[in-house]
Length: 633
Image 1: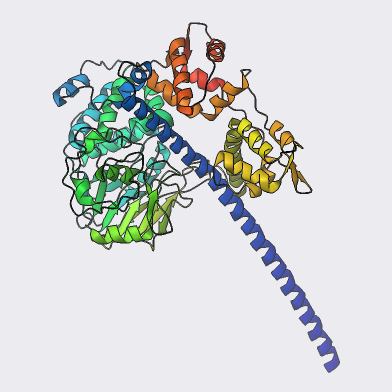
Image 2: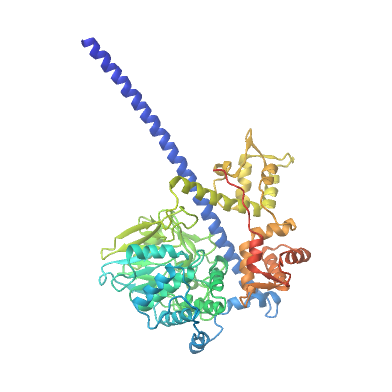
């Protein structure tokens, strides 16, 4: 009997051992699986972010080029005259003249209008009615738009550069990050947290507009509640509250599309209003809320005394009054003394607040990735917060997968409220509630629940790779030249190492190219890659134009659209052939390349679809829309 029990125990022991081994194998497999998913997630995120920041850098380079034309070309030159209107600080000097220019009283509201009707002064009922109307896709009449914006502008002009708010009266304050025209996110925040009121104050930390399709509705809602609760709604300016940035990222196009008759007036008024938005908010004297961040030269005393309305575009400080401030107790070392905006220390203050990003290492250096602002380290955070007796910096400006992220020993909090920013499922949005103890409490959300984890990941990866393929096509000739550099014997094959080096050398996106190789359809044999075959596999539906002008178009389509909308001074949405030619001349001067006049003329004729001698901007952009390859799942 004892022998039988011994055998049973030994058998049970073996079963347990096998079960343990199986569990360990499953655990190891699962850990590897999760690690692979995380690696793919990071690659996808890097693709989205690298392309986004490269676009911002492009925008700033183009704007700096326009600034160069304004500074160095004669007033009578054709290039200067084409762009001069975007640098005018004021078309009308006196506020009374502005009020007459934006007068809404002559605009009739027809009987066929079925949207919301507003009465002034604004009440909570009127503001909440506006929210409901926008929820049901209704458009506010241009008369009410101008009236609401005009009233909000009068209020913005009397606000300080830095709002000081307290939690003791309301018990809690809510802070929101970037919304970027995504109305569904704002509505979800209001659904979860409640509408703004004196008892439920909000701080909205900039970047209300661009990218999304409902920037105008978001602005109107925020300005409406600002009018109802001027002490309960606080708006900080973001880097996208800038009429030059709006030309590229969609807000200008949105307004002109929704308000075809009075869109130009609305844009002009908003341009002035953006320059009057406050720059920062301080909560209980301890928490600083700014859109971008700080630098080693940040001084809140200087910022509080700036004439902020003169910065119609933060990227181009005003000429008049640039050095009127008596700057005291400001660090004298400037890490960008040789940079493009070297005009003393204080003009940097605005750019740093709106454009900067934190970095892990100590120090402060130019933000070469975005092209504006700086990167600042933990030591700068400690110094600036300590000098102003602050304990926390809340900023936005960067998309985070969870909607928020701490850094710098939890002294800096990044908050982003636009969910699904890059693609459905790419990130959650978040907002923060903060009471008298100043401990942030996070509420995360995702405005679309249409996909679940697996299909969501696949969709996000697909979108990222499609965006990357567009970049590859746009730089096809440069890539071929870079590959040939590593192939002096003209064999048509190069090593994977040289392929990755060439990719990064041309695109400069900082991506893990070897990891992405299989996703981009590249096959190797004995560690060597046939780059000619790979280049040929970058198949898109190509319009039949000369290759050089086509690649230039794809590579710079955002710059082209920006120039189009600048040259289209009457906002008609169309350009004459001569204006189209001037657009290409400006672009080729910016790129330091020659584009043949005959090629431009042929291109203009081929996309003048109705043969009326003018080119519709939207039709032009549509004519060159990329048709991406199907991405392997």
